[in-house]
Length: 610
Image 1 (tube, rainbow, N blue to C red):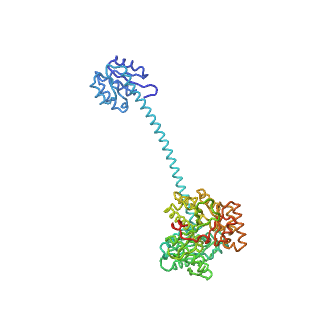
Image 2: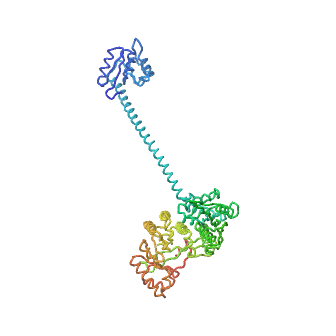
């Protein structure tokens, strides 16, 4: 159907009928064609492709309207032209529909009926043409979009492949040495730490060893022939080692002329056989550069992996001590040197390792306990209300088991910080407190403030503030009731990180107290840089201030400084009434010590009675 005007073919053997239909349809604006017999109608339909055919049924002589319709529908070029039969016989209607007609007009024709039925078909054809046009445009857009998506997907695949290559390359460079293509120190740290962690779980030896291998003549080659020769020596030495060790062994370059090897003790000889193979290969090796030949020697130090070694640093410490002893004893002549307990730091090293195991066992088997000590207000509250209940949580370690003797924190906190266990301990204390109060939510209404010690080392843990916020969410203990006392402030190495941690929790309502105020420059510096709410004067100045004039002077100056900063003061180690009176006279708000309350285990009954 054209956009300008529709084309209608009228087929009837009676010219008067054709004229009548033409008069009726003149108002439609359609182009009207006419045929007086069936064969002529087929020719015009095939050549001019009308949009609609009005077809008389009875057209003697020749073919009738039904046959014309059958032939039109059989021809693909005209099959889509709608046909309206014009007939005086109602019996013809069903047959007309059977051969492909879409409608019928009864004779004698009525102008309104003709216009309505023709108009309906023309409207349908117009809508169909519009729909086909929209479909063509949509298909074209789909083709264009598909082509665009194909190009985009191709570009994305290329970008993904490039990014994946870059990520793989970066991961490779992060874990491998650029010169030798061996693993680097970071990769060795990760691998050794995994094996040591398994040992802590199994609590038995693994039969694995770490070897530290030093090239004794590397400096001679590097200084006499240049760094390019030194790099080439390292590459050739790495290839030599790779040719001796097993495929499952982990070989790394630590730096300079030092290599390390994690190997299984496959022959039960503590790595002796493999170490001698390495030394023999080194003895046969000759490095040549610009006509010069260099014979090499190496030092091999062997350290077994065992549960007493709790970290990669401890393993490296043993390896370095063993390598140093090997050089001192002149072992660089074809014999490896094994780690010998007591050859380095002696009892101190063993004690450190023992502490690490003790603390790990305490975390795993719940051998810590939480105690508390009440803080005493030195200024009586106004009115007749109950005294505000403030308390500080204290940590104790039970030696050997839950009923074992108590170990004070001063003996194990430093070790916990050294072996990076303090963060787990600090989290354990907070979880234990929240568990107890969640079971007895009524206790929260009696508590004004609970203070928890938080190591400055713990502040370095990423995501700690968010974890604390999640632990407090929905808990009956409000953040406003919680105060974190920062200890060991000289360990704060990233002031911005500590400041952000404190600001995040202060936004929830938590408070912060500076512990051991006055004990060193670090506490004064951090008081200026960090948003502390409360100051706790170091007990060293408080305990004997009633007898020591210098201590009284120092405490007075610290209290005055706190007043100028508008920060409340807590004094610890208050063990006598005279000291308490002096502190009250100076304007100290809170006191803590044996004079008021001796620490006791944190239980529901103890809190109710406090």
